[in-house]
Amino acid sequence: MNVYLPGIKLNFSLRSTKLFLEPLGSALYDFPLTENYVEFHCFYYLTEKTDLTGFSEVLSGKSFEGAEIPYKWAILSRDGYSGIHVEFYDDPHLLRAFCLIDFHKNTLEISLVPKVTGNVIKVDPLFQPMGSILMVVMAHQQNDVIIHASGVDDDGVGRLFTAVSGTGKSTMAGIWKEKGAKVINDDRLWLHKGNDKWYIFNTPMPYYAQTPSFVELNEIFLIRQSLQNELKQLNGANAAMRFMANAIQHFYDKEMTGRHLDRILDIASKVPIYDCGFKPDVEVVETIRCLGSGQ
Image (cartoon, rainbow, N blue to C red; front, side):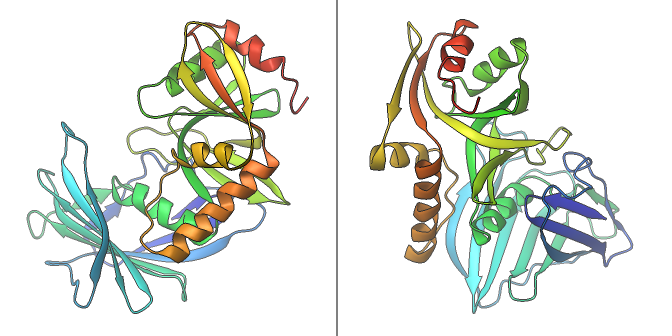
């Protein structure tokens, strides 16, 4: 089974007879999204325990309060290897999962510890939260960016809207859909560079399938709720830093942070960034279209 991400091909195979891959969010990502890609061989298997010998925890987190299946996760490191460990608190099928990443050999080994030994286990190849964390790690490895944002394809013009949770990313996407634009995604976008241009892609989501789509990135809007629609172009470090604030940053050393900053500065040098106050109605669409960028 193959799953494609921007610049990446994941070739999955199974090493346990009672384990099955059942694509849900990743079901439609079965064709190349970019002209060039790096192939990773990914091996899934069941085990009675995860072996974390020699690994040190470099970053950790947990599910949001009230999550249906709570969990905690950690990114681990050992002698050039990376790992992602997930411990589930109340999953009906799994206790733990561990992904060993070897970027030198382009391999992933994903071990699952079932709640009941001998039970049949079915998972999406990019099951939550392992898939979401893995995509951030792999995007960073190839100098890409994943960001909390909505994005639309407005007749070939790619517009990205980003803000903290609850500010209006989904609302903005819905307004643009009402005015005829195609919504790439209303929550998370993968920014990938090709031919010296940046593009926005959607990604496999945890609980629903969507058709893969992308568009060149032409404008970025840092949105906030306002009594009136207003736009102000930002420049320099201020634009870059405000944009970077909403990127997903699972980084744990200066080298990783430095590379990420270089990417953000490159995006800010190529794509105009605007502060965007908006009221939730269709008038904001024409306000933005009047900018004329990308036409």
